[in-house]
Image 1: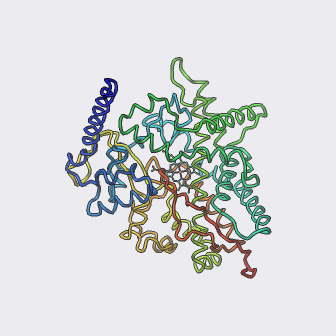
Image 2: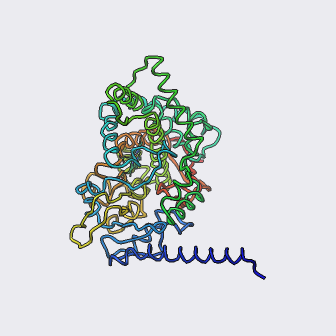
Image 3: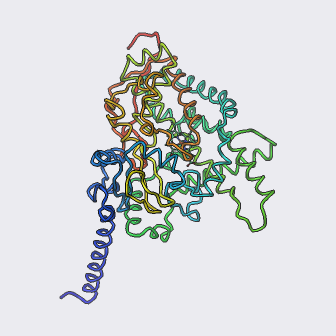
Length: 487
Ligand code: HEM
């Protein structure tokens, strides 16, 4: 006999299943109800656990090939995928006032260090962005160059010593350590010793910040049932140990500078000065902008944004040069071509495979009858555009000539956006380009690089959800000193 309790449980379960079916049915009818082309539940970005997110977006991009934009779903959330470069430029630049935010929801009480430029919204983002832009002014970049060069010398010494024992190495991790040293010394005034010390605390903290696949999936599913479940569960998005580490580093740096009357001109000092100025002028009852948490959140995001992006750009470029010796030879002959090779690498392997915006003010799509409602998520598929043969013929071919002086002006505006565009584009674009080129020039001046038995061809990217290309098995290359015989 089935007990009363079991019957009640079955009844509750059936009710729950009934609720979920009608809840999801309604959600997945959103784009259909607006009468715009869409890819339904089968293409939901969250429920494609086996593939890299850039590849999944590219599949939806191809399915919507006949349209300038179309609807897709991400964990049952409707997202408008924009395909047309002209419309992309309108959203990012001309009509920015309708799309000022990325729509990333942060609970500052639970995740205080997640409140930074990438996630902040509206007027608070604007106020902080204006104050932080001077970090990468031309004068500051000039002052940073000698520090960056110092890091390339450490890299050079490390390679010399390392390659004596074996000519092969995994460049992805090494480049992350190089980028950690550069961002540490240039922006934060910290010696991370990440190249010299493979187990440096900074490198470890960076590793801890990568979200675990299963956690990301469960969060997306819970969010698709109800957006308030996660704040209600008080589930942190950032790793507590990494958070404590960055909070500690910030407090120590501030204390050290105050005790030693150390007045540098880097990003860390800019943050400290902003905090001091604000404390002096803050009116009674007014909310401060630069709290300790906001300062630490920016130390953390500059460190994280600074080390994985640049390292990926440099290691992917070295990978292509190892596979294309004729291009590498030309590059050696004319180091200026580093610029073109770097541009082409950012096309083939954009560090951020897609851009996000949220509609912050209702928007009528030009030349269409669609009115995007406030709160609609918008996705700009950088990776798909960079791999679309319409804009880049033979997109899988590594061809730096696309970016030489003659051809660069033929690139369709809005179809090449490795750093985003408009008022929310990468704040550190010029710094990142300078750093990647310094590292490439320093390595290619002395070495030629070759694939090894361990090199994965073509590169396969891990099942990342962030859009950052992380090669599944790293990038293994053999280094050969220029002028020496091939072994
Ligand atoms: C090759 C290196 C890099 C690439 C390709 C890259 C790319 C990007 C992209 C695509 C965005 C989004 C832009 C948009 O939504 O329109 C972005 C934003 C951002 N990046 Fe970078 N980035 C790089 C390096 C860096 C570095 C070195 C830092 C810090 C030192 C940094 C800090 C930021 C910040 C703070 C934002 C948010 C800007 C805002 O919303 O106001 N990035 N980056």
